Image (tube, rainbow, N blue to C red; front, side):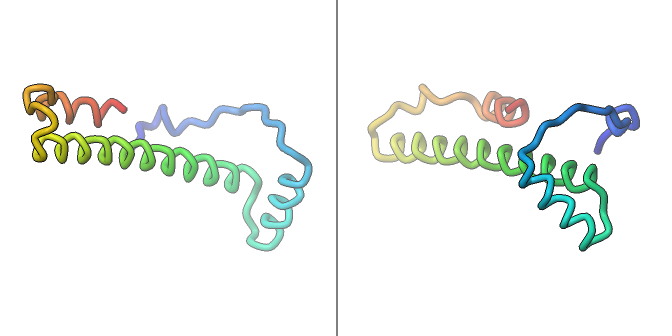
Length: 92
């Protein structure tokens, strides 16, 4: 959840290709929303997608390391502790 101060709006300048503005404007007319709402939702969606991608890439790497240990190709002492892993995931 975001704090009230984090929800405060701030104006930013943005340059987009003309064809995207035209598509956004067509969308605003069709669905009765404004440009800000569309761009905000697009940015939020993109950021969330990137966070998920980073999480799954990290998870995949962890699974590969575990498999290497189970196959005897890597020593378990090389792994981080669970607390270190949780801290890394929370701060990534």
